[in-house]
Length: 451
Image (cartoon, rainbow, N blue to C red):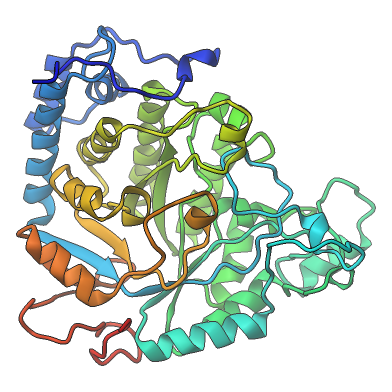
């Protein structure tokens, strides 16, 4: 029998000289007792639960199982036995980006997209007309939601007024080039949103980082930016680009991105104009458990202020083919123990966010289903196209049929249910009532989405 205190093989996070360390004056037993009682946890409690005791090395697997049991019980109390999924499409507009995030292999250097660049490259940019055609086809197949998260193409502007300001600015720090310098014109953010907002589909787009790009060179508030985006068809905002909401980590993995305070400012502004939000954490790279706990605390505080976050999505870092791995800064991602504890502690700590998602794209089917016993209650979406994880070396596929969802969820004794993006509409599915197809999308009629 394996030693339950055998240290987990992990990335060399101790090589980074961070101020925040996973050390507390709390005890694991006290933290677990608070979690079981339903008391609001503190950052030190989260550190104890994530480490299974900060006074020892490695994960204590007996203690880990007690944390998972507490989280699963909390899940059952809060949302019951239903496991939800959404019929959706990913339509990422462009891979052109020069932000230089070290965890990412989705982007392609934007210089390669210029007409003057002679060599071939693997990237893509879609025009608004192409985006509309892609979304129209998917809406006809029955999707409810289109998700769009893209690189920061230098030719992107918020709208015509923003482009005029960028064109006439004498600043050299705005990461802007006119569309005419590129083989493909991505249009403006508002043009892309109007193109994708077709047939009543729900448009989930414009991360805080994209909103920052959409206001560069102006004195516009994030409320102004998100208000214009909402008028163009935006329905909700993905809480990605969060990575780890602790600046000493961001300075290592994404030094050119907005900082924690600005990310939070943008998200709160989106909520202020009436947009729903999701939230994420990307963990398992250079950060430690103290950073993860601080991230959870900042998300919980944001939800206390806004009440607009519909779900929290832990995203386990896929290290293959990323600069962090290529440069020897990490030699792997999170362990399975860490993945399970991240889901569980998210459920226990985020007492004001009802839904915790298990990402089969990150974990795979078997482990993704296991996460449904660790505190998660949502199993992601059909994702008819998924380029980001795939380009980082992900191994778990690109799309999922409704029938697969029903079969997998019912096989583990839970109740499969199709949902809207905001979870306000949920349709339970009878496994015996075949064939299985989406019914909540604007043109969905139960026809299978994927054969």
